[in-house]
Length: 221
Image 1 (cartoon, rainbow, N blue to C red):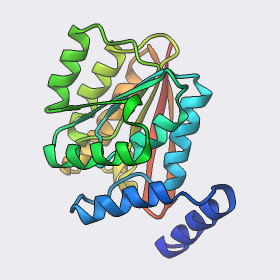
Image 2: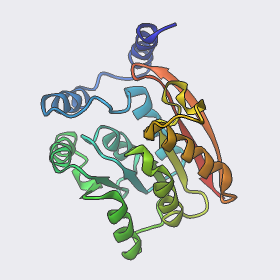
Image 3: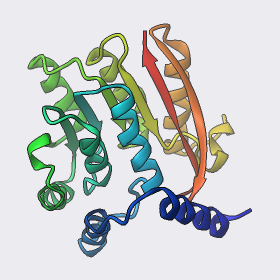
């Protein structure tokens, strides 16, 4: 089994279960045209995020790491009419592309994009009493995973769902002696979730068009 097979299966999942979506295809094309890195979630993963929003009956979603807004749009689509996604992005260019994508996808009215350091934006949200959020998706710089998880807890309630992406790293998460900052961030996410009694979590390994990775998911008790 290899990436070619995983990608073919991903394509099969999408063609079997999803309707054609020219809007989301245009979003990914816009991201490519604007030079954004191709690190968006896959379509199958985006649909999972949308379903998690619906399953948890979320009305308020927090996303840490917008990129071009592909995952944001998936989650916004899962919200009720009065729902809202607050998404945080460091890079002004990425944010500009994301805003255009939100308009094109017709979800701009359900998305609030804040530009700047995520840690500063999280502190501002806390100061504004913007929480609690019903679902929090963490997909930003991996070394800050424990900081983002700490803020996620602060901005959550009992029953909040927390998803932390890219925690398997091609299996490198097993390397306890490694010095890769992203792997250390993945291991820190496991340590945080496993070590905090307020969180009940697990992790899912994934293969697909994005390679071999996975995500951690937890619920706040």
